[in-house]
Image (cartoon, rainbow, N blue to C red):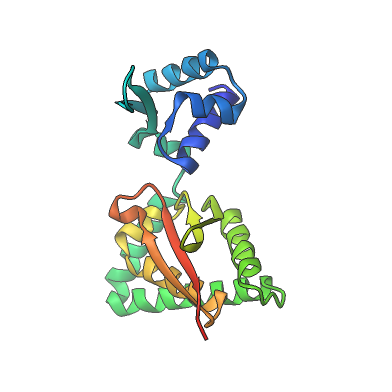
Length: 208
């Protein structure tokens, strides 16, 4: 696959459904060049389109990733992870899984806390957390809308494990809350396991 094809997949992964013109503009392509790449990716079964009518005139084509495209953004060691989780559950029961999740939570809190380097500003801490998560494969970024700050994770490299053990997702929410501090509230508003294309967390400054 040419680099441009990979860039298109990355764009659709991080931005969601996008129109041909928007893809061309973001990647510095002509509409014809973008259309050729999109049609090639569609022929490979990696993307699909939907025609959207926006007022009068011809409908506009919007492109999205298929389930097959998930193979381009791998779930870290998913088969081995699922096997190990199954072994822990069989050997030690649910209590063993809970201890495993708690241990991972403590280790993450120690690592993230050390990386904060004394940052006190909420935006700075959130950007640092996003950087740490990005390095772990979560394709994380910080955004802001009319309601406030968002931590967005466009990919979950432990999705298979989280599907089998929902405690991992609950633990990550607790980790974010602890790392960002008691002066804010962290709420998950999008969840990959619930069918969303991403996980997103709203971070709200606490009022005094």
